[in-house]
Amino acid sequence: MKRGLRFLTPRKMYIQLVVLTYFVVGANSAYAYVDPGTAGMAIQALLATLAAGAATIAVFWQQVRAKFDNLFGGKADASQVDPGE
Amino acid sequence: MNNPVAGSFRDPAGHVYDIDGRIIRTIAPEAVEDFRQVMAAPCFQSLIDDGWLIDSNILSAEDCPLDLPDKTMAIEHSRIPFISYPYEWSFAALKSAALLHLDLHIRCMDDNITLCDGSAYNIQFIGPRPVFIDLLSLRPYREGEPWAGYRQFCEQFINPLLLGAKLGIAPNAWYRGALEGITAGDLASMLKWQHRLSWNMFWHVFMQASLQNKATAQSGNSVPKIPHVARAGKIAILKQLRKWIASLSLKSSGISTWGDYAHSHSYDSDAESQKRDFVAAAVKDVTPATLLDLGCNVGDYTVLALESGAGRVLGADADHLALERAFSRAQAEDLDFLPLYLDGANPTPSQGWNGVERDSFTTRAKSDMSLSLAVLHHLVIGRNIPLDQAVPWIVSLAPNGVMEFVTKDDPMITRMLALREDIFPDYTQARFEEILSEHATITASQVVLGGNRVLYRFTARA
Image (tube, rainbow over all chains, first blue to last red; front, side, top):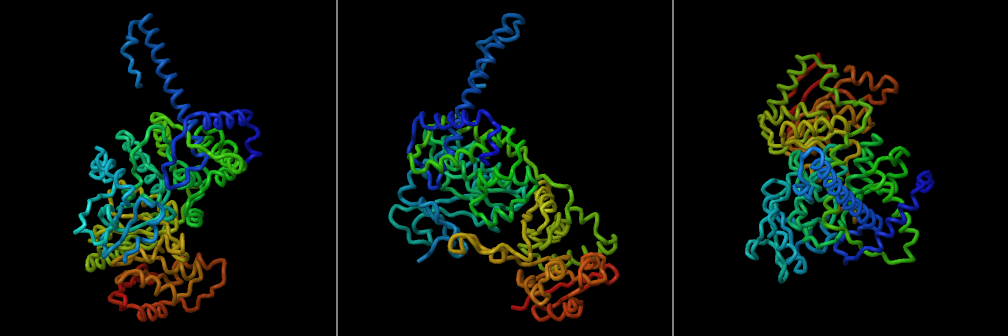
């Protein structure tokens, strides 16, 4: 397992990012009768952060596109973009 | 003094009791407030109405057959016709259960309700329809809390599914030996390097395994903390998992011993018709509420039994592709039919904590009638189970039944014996009838296929 991951150069970077996210962000009290596992918690923290980042980029990109459309084609109005999309 | 059912002990928030056929769930005083919040959520009743969540009625102290401690709440649920376990499910059934788990969680999150675990044992099937049965898994969502059941969900749903989808290995045998599921570490060591290129497998399997190894190695050095996971992020993870699981399908060579049985067996249409008439008449006479179809294959005789008056059918087969087709057929045709994985020579035992947490198949498979068509010779000749043990085992499964005896002249048995010594001198029709008569009353019989196969209808002796 450990050997197999060596070919991925960013592995250590990933792990450090995950561990960083895991320890830097806030903490709640436990709320479960099952053991969630350290890795399970860390993966969720990171994937949730990535999902939030992707959503932000998507909104930003839509706004940029809408502005360009408005500028050159008049197809859409940036103010009409739903930030929830 | 009533004791909870053997598998109900992990969550101290409540326990389940089976009292004279009534299923009662108690809710401990410390969990009552949370449960009231869950019940007040708009999704709660709609999930029950849609059949996603087991129906649940609050019992007053007078209606409750238990002596409830002070401030303890009691709920009554409908009884599930047959309790099955994930290691008995086909790939399609496990996938269907996983999707229900995620769909229910996503819907609950809209009302700020979450699931505190990810256990596959919280899903049961009514026919081929999955239903979530553990009410106390539903808890009010607290801002920023991650899904505590994520690892459990991976081990009990995702990893077994990946074993089937990516490696073509049916997870049932492994799962039966590891009731808590398959760990990311174990799965990661089996997957191929190219699987790391998959975004989902990279994170949910390889990275999880790697981090868990790291955490284990450092376990003495730090106390782990629970991270903050934003609500939107949590929902995004659930939706991503749902999309991923929906795309998985059982990888197979396409070769199934029995999946093509309906098209490949040695019957002509007349023999098939005779056999169907015999079975239909027997089922009509008994009209069983529950029929056990041992060796159900893709469900041809199950459908016939349902059409002939059986209330519901529990199927059992050891061929994974046949089960896959049978389950999909049950869903597509809305049949009250649950096909499960069962090796007749090694039926699911009673196991788990104290050897009783999960009941054996034969304890659970209480049915009114059994159908065992072309099964016996697989036990006796295929697996060397003595005839005088195999016949009474089949008879013991239900008070009424139809059993097929296949003679050694049948091409199927000729093939089975082609490469091995015939060490079955007592595998004869006469000896079969003798043994069956010791354990049951034969009420009808019919020869089909030119005498190579004989159908028997019987009533078990009390």
